Length: 445
Image 1 (cartoon, rainbow, N blue to C red):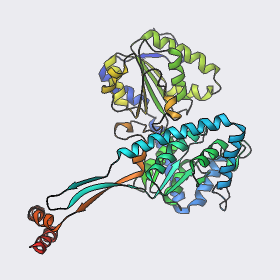
Image 2 (cartoon, rainbow, N blue to C red):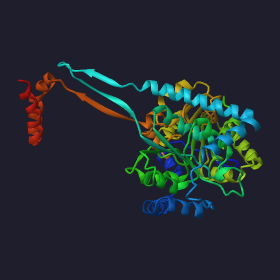
Image 3 (cartoon, helix red, strand yellow):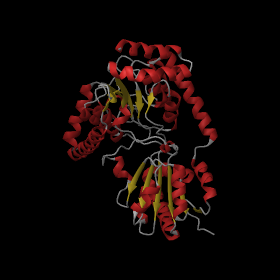
Image 4 (cartoon, rainbow, N blue to C red):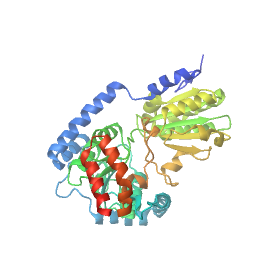
């Protein structure tokens, strides 16, 4: 019998049980269906009535009544927040600038890797492709249970480095009575916007904000940024209307640890994810039972003493897991779940790394805590969730670019290609494709 911890320790002993573990970490079907229906109704209203509907839903859900004639937060308010932060909390402002510098440095490095391509053809023509920035992008900054200037930087900077002409930010407002600052938006978010040079920021959140970005005046080419299950579902329903970076919903963390790991560090890492959202998932897998028991005790003690106890208890009790499993089963679980974040708190992480390809981001070694990724070591913290990391990449500069193919044929190239283009087109029954190519060949004779 296991001791009774806040999160019981469970055994994973067979590879055949891995799919069941992954299914147990998914959101309940009833919750998902209710979310789909709620979001569909909000998006339908916004599609029909635009900003008026988005503002109506903001009043109903956030308790904030917005003025349609002054919904955009003025640049002077952003600059005032930056000036005030610089004067009152210079160390915090310095930290914000350091984070921004690291994110921008990484984004510039990403852009440098995205090279245009041009290949010569025998007749003097070329084929290739080029990277083109999107014209407009909407960035979503969560703000339900906390405010995230870090996410503002993570979404805006790659778009800027990509060369997006218009970047529109949205973030949920809080009632003025509970939060000082312009438009119910945290002053640190406003200061960060000013530091980034963002000039369009609106106090709109939730599915209604995404609907307005897609259907309203911005009519953006792409929406990027994380959010709760309602935001993630809105993005899912908007696929095809505009581009979507990824389904970045409630956060997920899988930690694989061995006996060399510090149980206090591991407990805090799990709590760091769990404190985001009651729907957050935090999982620790180890073949060392003593380590799991030590972490369980730390979680019990630290959760009880935490100022964020209510959220922690809800998320850890529902989606928290402590799993006893051997190395091969730990790898199998990680590969099948494809978590947003994967920490390797093991003595030799490089032995594990080649086998772990599906996670959104990997944090290599015990000192590489996920929180460093959240606050600007460089790589982006907007990551795919809900197993979409199997096929989707982290947010980055490439998210805000599109590849455009290029074809430049000389008369000699066209004449050389025309005969086999004709044959293939005729074989497919496309007469005019064949004739179109033949005309170019005739012109060259």
